[in-house]
Figure 1: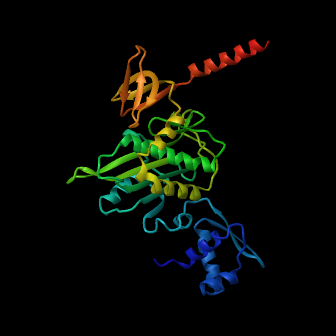
Figure 2: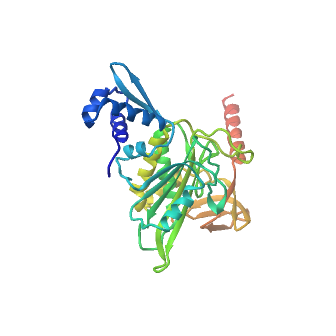
Figure 3: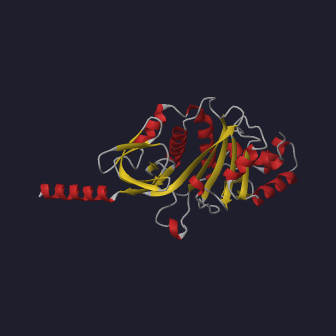
Length: 340
C-alpha cells in the first residue's frame, strides 16, 4: 500500500511523542523539499491534528480530538490496514458492517468506527444515543471462531470482560461493573453497551461471521430526558488510542471466547448477583433474586416462592439496590451503637 507524505510525517511525529522534529530532518528522511513538509503539516492540521511548530525546534504532535484512521493505524501497528473504516457520521456502524459483509468475503477482523451515529441501536432495536465527539461507536466483523454452534451468551460476556480490561488501563480508579448480559455500568449508571449479531451461512447453516457493536460514553454529559438518570460518561481520554486498544483486545482474544476465566471475571464484576432484579422476557416481567450466572452465560433467578429458573435471554430492566443500601446503613448504625 502506498502511503502519502502526510501519513508518513504524521507517523514519524507519533513515533516521537513530546519530542520536536525539525523540518530539515523530515525533509531528509522522506527525500522531499521543506515546502512539501510544510504542505503536509498544513494538510494534517486541517484533518484535526494538533501540531505545534516552533522556530529552531521544528514540529511536535500534541493530539487529535477527532477520530483518525491514520492515527489508529499507527497505534495498531497497521494490523487493520485495508480493514479499518472511520467516518465522521453514519446511521449505524452495525448497519454498515452488515451491509459490507453482504458484498465482501471477510477472512480477518474488520472494523467500522464513527464519531457520530444518527440511528445507533442496541438489543431489540432500541436506540443507542450516539452524539458526536464524546463517545466511541464501532462495529467489528469477526469471522466465526469455530464451525460448531456458538455459545452466544459466552460470546457477549467475554466481549464485556475484554472491553472492561482495556477501560481499567485508561481509568484505573473507576469501578466498572457488568449488568447481564450486555451492559457496562459505572456508579450504577450505564456507560456502555454491546450488541452481538450472527450472520449465518445458509448452505451449512452455521455461523459464518459475527458482527459485534460497541457503544461507549466517554465524556458524554448531556443525555435525552429518558436517559439522564440512567446513563453517564466516564472521563476524558485519547479516543484514538482507546479505540485502538479495544479493537486489538477483541481481535486478539475473541477466538478464545469460551475460556472459563472470562466468565469468572464476569461473575466477579457482576452488579446484579445477589440483588433483587426485574427481568423482562418476551414482554413478561419476572422478579426475583439473581442467584447465578451459569457456565453457558445464562442467568438463574430465584423467585419469591423459592423456585429457581434459568434464562438464556432477556433484559434486566431493574436492579433494586435499595435493599442493599438499607442493610448497609443499618449495619453501620449498629456498629456505631456497639462502639458507644
